[in-house]
Image (cartoon, rainbow, N blue to C red; front, side, top):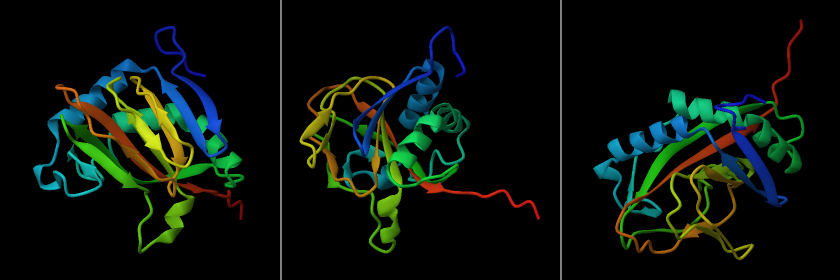
Length: 192
């Protein structure tokens, strides 16, 4: 495992078979991602999705260097999660989308899943929320009756058909998160 500044970049634990918590410790990457969200909230997206607050475009981070560094650092854990959830042999991910969220006082995220009505296969995809601060409330998962306490760099990994929400945010300073969806893939080496 690559060590950054004397600190392992990733620690993780399974809360449930289909819910994983990763703690990511690369502060430089987290700071750059947070700054990009702050500077790229799209006013046309404001309160137009399940995020009843501000957000970037859905594909804002898909080609982003810092996002790819984060993904590279946690990929070994994501493959463990994929394997544990029936994606045996997955060795590649396709990024479906990756965006930033900002909640200001009295904003929230509606109860939702990351299924797309025109593409039900997304139920088998992996979704992740990344906390960029420790401002509560955390993300709530009704199925498990669990609210994940926010902490900078904490990631919640879950299947895309898992319902989740964020209650009304009550603090004065904005709350920032990163969200993304990945498709697990098995790529065979063609030796012919």
